[in-house]
Amino acid sequence: MHRAFVEAHHRPLGLDRFRANAARYRRDLPGRLRPRLQEKRQKAETESKTAAGLKYPLKKRDDAPQTYKLPERPKALTPKPATTRTKAEQEFTLDEADYQEILRICESMSLVIERSPTVFEKAEEEYIRVHYLVQLNGQYQGKATGETFNNIGKTDILIRQENKNVFVAECKFWGGYEVLKDTTDQLLGYTT
Image (cartoon, rainbow, N blue to C red):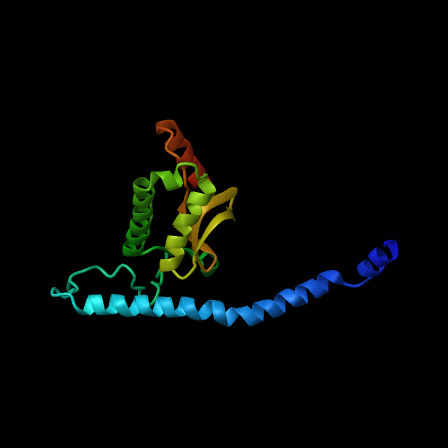
């Protein structure tokens, strides 16, 4: 008995078991799949006949928003060179329309957060910031960065043109007027 036990354990039983299971699976698979596929096909045909037999055809509204449609191409930021003393000090200013569009995107994301409070109620600031970055980068070809080192600290949202800041933003939970003043000082510390 002991000798049979030792001999049995010297053979790769796990591999033999695996091979037997794999062979059984290959053998049984067509018999398991065919009935399910036939059932799905019959269901699809029945649904298709039902839809075709409706007396009131569905009609798409001409003015329905196409929320699934991607923009034909991402928007390009077009900062204009600012007037500076020398070429070495080249700076850029955002066009007012681009600036307003960035604010509109951020405002839209804020509305999403307000209207889905259970999704965001336990989210920390860094996770919420990522949602803003996704929206901005989807529109502006990945130019927005987060937690980016800038001057004396790390900026929550930063958009640059040729390594120069054109948009700086901080994400904060509302804490009142004093926190707003501190945040303003923080933002001014990030500007160069």
